[in-house]
Amino acid sequence: MKINPLNYLASGDIKLSNFDTLPKKLLSKKEAKAALEKSRRSLAQFQERLYAHDKHAVLVCFQGMDTSGKDSLIREVFKDFNVRGVVQHSFKVPTELELSHGYLWRHYIALPSKGHFGIFNRTHYENVLVTRVHPEYLIAENLPEIDSPSDLSQEFWDMRFEQINNFEKELTQNGTYIFKFFLNISKEEQKNRLLRRLHLPEKNWKFSGGDLKERALWDKYMSSYEEAISNTSTDVAPWYIIPSDDKPTARKIVCDILLQSLESKSHIVMPQLDDNAVGKIEGYIKLLENE
Image 1 (cartoon, rainbow, N blue to C red):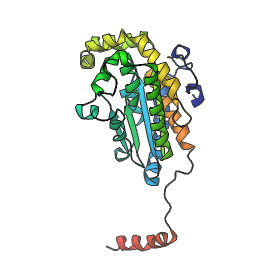
Image 2: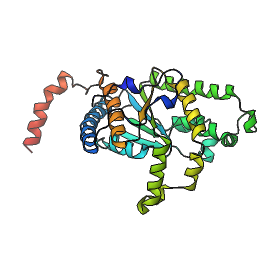
Image 3: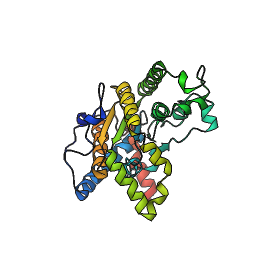
Image 4: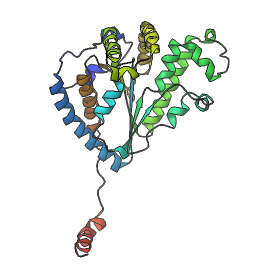
């Protein structure tokens, strides 16, 4: 299956109902696994070049409803990476320290350094998604002139979209490539995955009664995602909407989008030794062999 990243690119005002949750061409589990293994090895080879080149970073962001498959996708797509060159962060409820700073602070300090991949499992977009559905959470941020959810206006959310766009633009201007993936599952598939967590004792720990409360707010979340994605999918930090009702195929699509986009960065290569260093290699070999 040849992936065209443009088929998944979000642009303009989007409606998630216009995007597939199941790929048009569905691979068998065996086919998807074999194809992913090949792609992720190539992606890992790029990671080695990125690490050695040491002038750029890659930030990969994942958002999606509960059970959309973020954890398992990250595990499978990045399985062949050298651990020294990749770091993952999962952003939960802000701590007291995090709340004492601006909302982007905890994301700034988690950014990947040059030569590294950073993976955000839930991201800075929680600040225009969860807080949009639950505006009462914003009171804990102790914001100027925001004393209750009724003080929030559309101008406030537009301001946050602009702040996020500026944040991402700054990152790209300083050498970070950004990819943002929304794992798009159907409400029916989420139901099936939640039931699986309940039916299988080894999966029970993943289930929380709060999952059902959030599921009841599905339409609000879809609306919030649509507005956030529509306002923040840019040339430098695009959103890709991935059909995710089938996990193996979704992993393959994400890996191929990353691989095709990053392999086009032909300037990211292994450093070349200067003539003086190359001339010393034979001498170093002889010294070691003659020990």
